[in-house]
Image 1 (tube, rainbow, N blue to C red):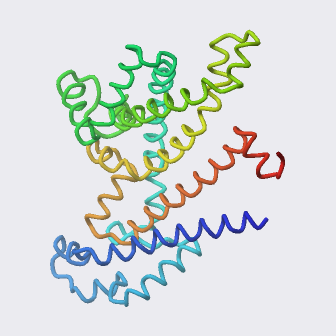
Image 2: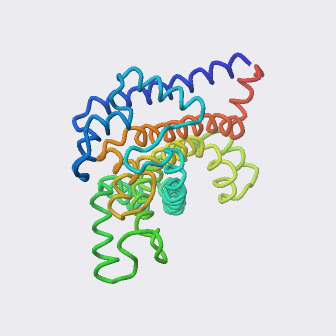
Length: 309
């Protein structure tokens, strides 16, 4: 019970530190939402508009008001859209989750066979080819790969739409852009993890008992080698939720990342804070779910937690 309380306090502390840091940096950054809005409106009084938006209040009062609203489930109203922040975020969240899940699925489909082949054929041409792909995948940033895919596959050949998400297969190019870099990282990590466990005693015992090599690899080695992969996947899912800003901007994908970059440009403080808060909550939840998955996958962790030898 004490461990659970400490874990909960740690979660709340992380969320508070991140949100507070973002709140301070936002208000220290140059630019003013009132100035941006008055650039689009004629005849509006700056002082009146600032009062309507609550920006005439002290920074400390705005901070207290924001935290109090979050505790009550009220994340405030968007300065630009004049709608509840939570409503706007929930409208965009499905698009980002869809893109993140598709990117991870593509990454797993690429990395799983490549990582296994590279580990089994260590030092051979198969291993070198897989590692070359991983190096290229990690070296090409999304803001370079995305436009290349658009020019080659969308503009030149017309196989996929250039932007948006309503056209058939509109998800393919942004998902490939996000999934390629993740696949490269997963391939290298899976290879390294498999090489660590393939020479352990339980692997030699399974082989001595006459278990087929494919069963040894999949049922024994891969399960134990998958623990660091699980960590990376969980953290990358959280990163994709908020880190797909460039990809969503390049492909005009109406997700949380595009909403966040638009809100930053407009100095829409409540919307930026709400998006960051959701991303932080997601990270914290993923980390705790990973701990549960660890206990299920690795009996040594379960035994340590229960005090067994």
